[in-house]
Every structure is written in C-alpha cells, then in structure tokens.
Length: 195
Image (cartoon, rainbow, N blue to C red):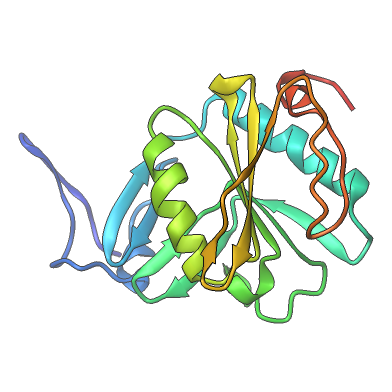
C-alpha cells in the first residue's frame, strides 16, 4: 500500500500526476472523500451532521416513493474512466444493477445522482460535478443547497449536457417526474425525525 507522507509544506502524494483510480485506491482510509476529475485529486472532509441528516432524509423520502425495482444508495464509488472517479452523496440505481462489480458502480447503473452542497464543495457541486455527471451520461442530477432554504436544483440530461435546472425552494412542493414521480418539500430535508 502506498503511503502519504506529511511534510512541513503539506502532504506529498505517491507517484506523479495525473492520478489514476488504481493509485487512488491505495490511499489510506482516513474519513476524507478522495475523488478524481481528469486525473486531478479532489479532497473533501467528512460530511457534517447537517450534510448527513439531509442525505439520510433524502434517502428515506426517495425509498418511500420509488418503485420496488429501484434503490437509493449513499456514497457509492462511481467509476467513469481510469482518471474520473466520484463519490456522489446519493444515487438511485436499479436494485439489480447489472454494471456494478462489488466496489464500483458504472454511470450506466445510475438513474439519478445527488450532491448536498457544503461550503467546501459549493463550486465543485454547481460546476464541475454538473459537467462531469452530464458527460458520464447520468440522466438526472440533483443539487441541494442547504443555505438556500434549502433549495433543490433538478437537472435533466439534454443530449450530452444538462438543461437549465428547475429550482424548488424550501416551503414549496418539489415535484420532479424522473426517474419516477415524487413530491416533497425540500424544507423537510432539514427536519430531524420527519417522515
């Protein structure tokens, strides 16, 4: 296993850039999310309590509304290419995903990917992930902005990119129809114990 060496100027990663998924998988399990975008390393801290609450609530809301052949999963490994690897906060996949092989999911398995925005990931989730998930062919992308009430932004694939998002602010009913019809108030994502 490769080691990550701390130095007075930061951390030295093993090998030369660009990184590959095989090299990334040699990193230690230290609670951080390590992702790759075109071989560049993206590092996120462990999610906050609010972030985890929203993931959990969204997973429950989706699970209650979706058909039985679909399944919501949190923090899966999404392998796009050997230099593009992401860990979406939540995905919806067919219960019998044919493309997944143990540790990794293929974009072909993912019907919906969702990211909960935090201060450290705001630009990444609004820009980079929007581009990357569209390029990977994921039909639906949800971006949830907790600091905006919260607000749910729903992107639908139009060719090889997402069209302009539909925004649903907390206090109103979000009613996306794909990958299955669902209705909920984004504000419910912040309420502990709400079902």
